[in-house]
Image 1: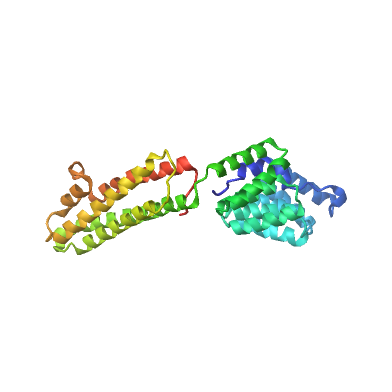
Image 2: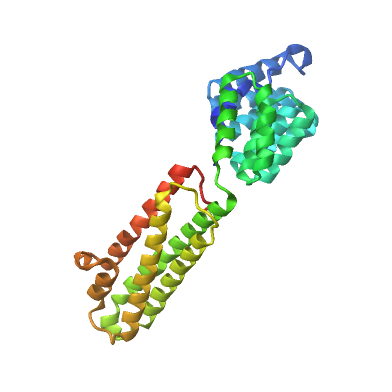
Length: 329
């Protein structure tokens, strides 16, 4: 999601950068540095642009436009703290400068602080209600928050205002994504299952690793507990998937996801039972045979455990590729 609108913002650079005319600047030299900075920004030369804008600000420290332009360069370099400081200063100097709010909102969007982004975009719209770019950006922030009705309304407001073909195409694509977007409960089911998968992988890996010490200690209790913990995570995966009221039609990976979750639950419970019944024999081969089948018994235990998880990971990766959403880390 991060940097989602970078291409569109770049295409619409002139909407948020400001060329200063000599008549409205403190000094003509400051204006020249600012305008050279804008040219460098348009060329993607961020460090060079900052150097020019530093000079512009030094010569005319009351220029909100120069601060906002420099903030834009810092944002492109992902120097977000400096970017926000520059936009804050620009707004302090010129509270009715819509471009500064637009740029600060885009920075908050990059930082995935979507509520702040919505607030800044809203302020920019109040100051400049005919900006297609600002409506489109706020729509994307609303979409990131899962507020799809508000996102749709903003995209629809932006569309008739968009004179730039690239921006208009972006808005159409965004509306199409909203029309086919998953309901939040579907996303919650898959994202919750993925979070549990990561926990299941860790617990199962621990169980298999602990099994290697059983011949030495004669005690497989810890391995059994780790295997039971892994089974519990698989159970939670199943419950999350079963709790989704209606999966979208024509998605075979859903059945695959459920089938593998059930398989992992059963394998982990079988391992836990084997560990509990064992008195500490050579469990490495037994565990791998139970979990993965006899063909994998010659591989190192933990490596085999990781390989056993790769199938479900690939299923989930395909989910992201097909649906276009990303679960939070």
